[in-house]
Length: 459
Image (cartoon, rainbow, N blue to C red; front, top):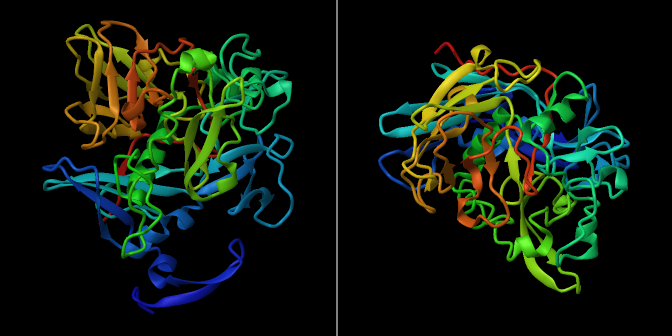
């Protein structure tokens, strides 16, 4: 058989017969998009094996799983997360494991420049002749935020309205124009802890557990850009695929237009952790009505869902760990990434981390838009800031003017920062200990280890 031939098989999870190219069975080729760096458009061009690109989500097993503390994982039904893929009832309340989003197989990512083009590719096999990062099986909280088990003082990922899992700072809010449901913070993400504290609470689950790992956030961004074909994730959602059956467009604004948020509930979460679960492993946008104390809808929040990952941007700041920024005497940022996901995270121990690059200082603290990204060590941080809200990455970057100290990169953006929000978003103004009402950090894990050093695969 040749790469041009097709095979037929039975998909037990989808319950139907499917046709797939032999090239996927043989593992040839890779999924790839490229961007012309001489142009400012965020839209990428599909190149290489189009079949591989079209099938990448299923090849990687993108979707939601129940994961126990020993890293055993069970796939949820792709159309109903209250069932396992095998048909049994699934509970997302923590009694059957953590409600996570991720992959079922290791894979490889390569990013390279060729002429005026920037290429981003993913494959089940190393991409010949390119620097490859091996991505282990991993998962991150399906709601892309942290939930605290207040009884056991552990970070988790569950849909549960018991007081044990109360969100926010662990207490009901006593002021604001929000609904009673929202003020209770029952079933909402945990906030008001520093980024490094989220990591410590997650690590109580054992080796291979953490919170907001930077490399996972970068992998999410790269997969989104390859699969959806744009670096501008806030582009309107387009349910129609192109002539090759590929996704085109973003997932909309996200929960980035919340009005009068401080008066509503003091900048605490505005949508519950369950919002979007009805889309299961789908791709699209789900609307959630945010109501005030009178029961009136004050904001229809659009929840972006990426193969089951809810709110990957636009609701709450995501505090990142396993990556740190150290402010230099000239106000610039020096970035370091951890050499392992198995070691205890000490953000100040840069001597034992991998230096991956810097970001120039700004004359005054303020916002710009990202034009180029630094993916060394899968850091996923800005390297140049000469874009706009509709060009290049179209996401915001905030730089302060401090000349010393550590900064935890804050990603995703939050519910009133509008066009600054996105998968490449960077705010460099928060210390690892700084807590905010609108800052969370999602539980994450891998049974393997992450290596931030790429290798060149034989051509």
